Image 1 (cartoon, rainbow, N blue to C red):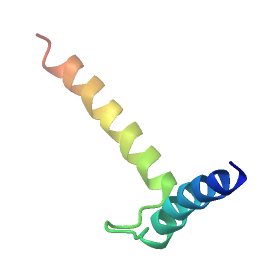
Image 2: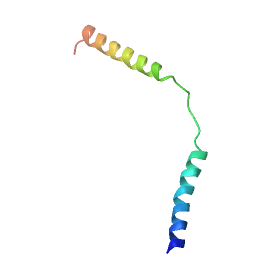
Image 3: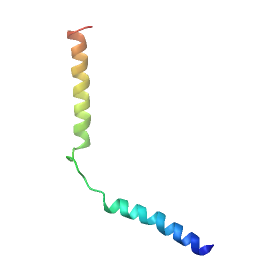
Length: 55
């Protein structure tokens, strides 16, 4: 039984190692502050649109 446990631990660890070796950034690297600024700007635009074009 001890031999079976060693095989299970190795297989579960091998999947994690393989996952981290394949990790790549496939998109543009954006500063987190930029995302916050964009979100705030979009909120202001939406609120201004609600004031000038009420539905």
